[in-house]
Length: 315
Ligand SMILES: Nc1nc2c(ncn2[C@@H]2O[C@H](COP(=O)(O)OP(=O)(O)OP(=O)(O)O)[C@@H](O)[C@H]2O)c(=O)[nH]1
Ligand SMILES: [Mg+2]
Image 1 (cartoon, protein in one colour):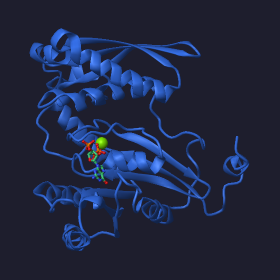
Image 2 (tube, helix red, strand yellow; image 1 turned 90 degrees about the vertical axis):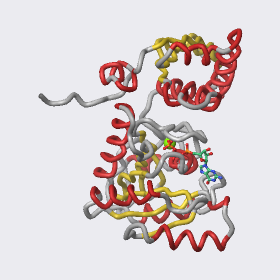
Image 3 (cartoon, helix red, strand yellow; image 1 turned 120 degrees about the horizontal axis):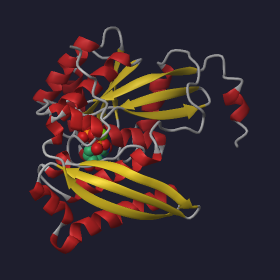
Image 4 (spheres, protein in one colour; image 1 turned 30 degrees about the vertical axis):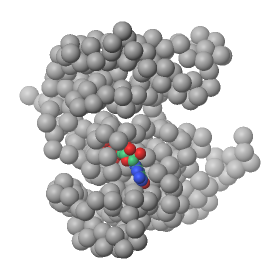
């Protein structure tokens, strides 16, 4: 590999830095987009609909002088079912474990009631942890609005820095990452140089399929869907076989996912297959099945079956 390898493997610079940055904020402010931008590759799915990310998801950024572990989190919101509760707990837990909390905010709108609520949550959980605000989506506002909102957001909570960025266009992102690196403690490299995430190909495949469903459906459906990969086989160097089950909560939703004459499921399959093929560098044979799992979002056992690691309540 690169000539940097020996430096990374054996001779870390004496002031090598590392640590965990919890990336938190309301749903839909651009947390996952920002992490994908920093890593230069898509490790988390993104959509214009809130509550896209459902779990903690690690993004590993490695350069010679340090390694940053970005923890993507589900958007902090008022949960309406067990899945929502689990998502918010995941996000809050990430705040407790972080070396720095990076609160992502959407500067294209005024501070919201939900942001004030998050300020309270962060204040309650942060202890001595440093807090950096990333004011995202600056591409959507003029400079006057930027200044006014920078001040308004800065007042939500005492913070160590506020940085203006556009995750979509990349503006300000290098500066943000440099600043975060400078403020991490000295520490070792925790992951190999070429590792950018912790998730399996299977999980990524399920997420890509879920993303296509979110993008192509409306109302409750994006939130009601879970995807399980029941078979994932590299049939040859050129062909990956993936079979997935799409779970919905009601029969009517199953009908929508399949579509008239199967046109929706065909479209979902085509879009997911194309992205997976590019990602994996092989042809992809994708088989999709749709099943109803009544009200799975309210049932901890069903959620566990679908791979959400819900802690068992102590008796
Ligand atoms: N214009 C603009 N849009 C952005 C920017 N960053 C993200 N977006 C868009 O905002 C929407 C939400 O982005 P996500 O990255 O999924 O947001 P998130 O905070 O991870 O959302 P959840 O996972 O639901 O909590 C998507 O449509 C993105 O394309 C930005 O800098 N500028
Ligand atoms: Mg997200």
